[in-house]
Length: 540
Ligand code: ADP
Image (cartoon, rainbow, N blue to C red; front, side):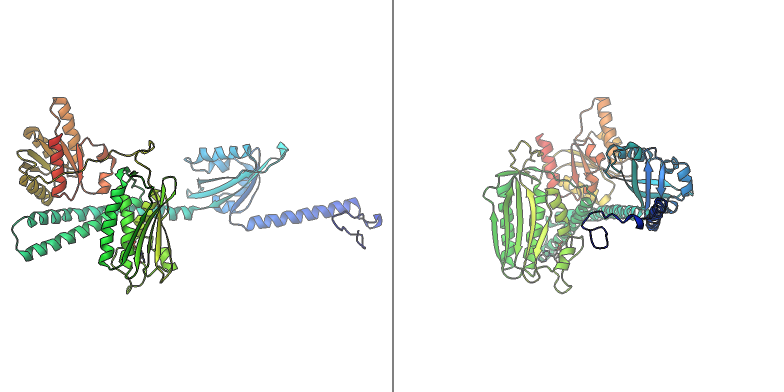
């Protein structure tokens, strides 16, 4: 006890009986304190933006703050009177989910449950709600209470939907551009290829070589854009195949060493000795990451060296690191350069580029099992790191697709004597294919739409047919289906049909994937893939 007889050191002090107020007075004082405390709590509850409520086990509302009236557009009094009106306001599609949660909270007191749902206000407006609630732990069932908050997240949801729609629109736009660019490129590449085989003088040859390399660069850019669009929509996946890893890496090393030597910088290559001889990888994607990071390093480094390292991290995981002694990347740029079209530095220090490589590599890195990261300081070089899975091709878990046979090609008369039907509505493409096939010795007939294709196929009985997937009136897939049906009904021999698609996104479409074609090719069609198709047809 202290001198004045107050509570001290956690002990309760007895007041002299003479100073103690009467029982009534004490009760009164206690009530006043309680009322003041409750008032303060209510004031706080009223002041917050979120709806805050408490209910009992019969779903009777004990308390709800005024935010309810603002968000739900209904009076609190109506809810106190009719607790069922809470559920009546829930959007029919979300109703069952909400009802289940209202029950479920009682089964595990203390465990918060969060859910999002829509409500319909009396004026018909739909609002999105984020609701978080839990039952208070108690021994006494009669005192069971659940409390919760509800936040109006309509604006957030609308922004999110807007972003998703914008993303979708961007992808559709990219796909359309991709398609519209590929079609003329198809013609340029194909005809320059044909032209280069005719008699030309030296200057003409040089001009033509420039045209071809320009067209190929443009095609690369179109492919990069379409890649990005597919990675953005999550439409891309890895296609692992058994790959001779050592020779795959050797080829890359040689190719990159030449590029480093051309810039007069040293090139070091260190790969783990325990790398499997054959690994189950998507070689195209792995190559894309390896080339992009290393070619960037070479591009930005004017003096010193570029080093590529591939070290085992554990299991089948390897860490790819590309280190350079280039200009380095400052902190602000490090945060931006993984975004599409973002390039670091200033206009005077920039090197040629589209700003797309790293954003593609980062998305590919994630598909391969790790985040692409950079460590760098301005003026002190950069190091890019990626994690890649390189499981041996012998692993039973390796779900590789079978390896494609190495492609022989180049037989000029591969189509000698063949009757070939081309269904293609784009006249330049049709002419190009016709020319290439006729040069290979085929007799070629061209039609411009699906209906015409079926009719011509019926009387021509071609040895092979090229069918463009998208054509007016009846598209290539519908025509293909019709032909397969007629073959069945009339017991005719199956005609080999090559489905020709415009771009990656189209090739990935389920209709195309499921179409009963013998093979698919993508535009622009050049001589080599055409000859490969003819050869595989001849051999089997
Ligand atoms: P691009 O090289 O086509 O511009 P990337 O997406 O590959 O596009 O790279 C984006 C930017 O990141 C580059 O413009 C450059 O500013 C920076 N960057 C990438 N790699 C390096 C590097 N090794 N050294 C310095 N800067 C780099």
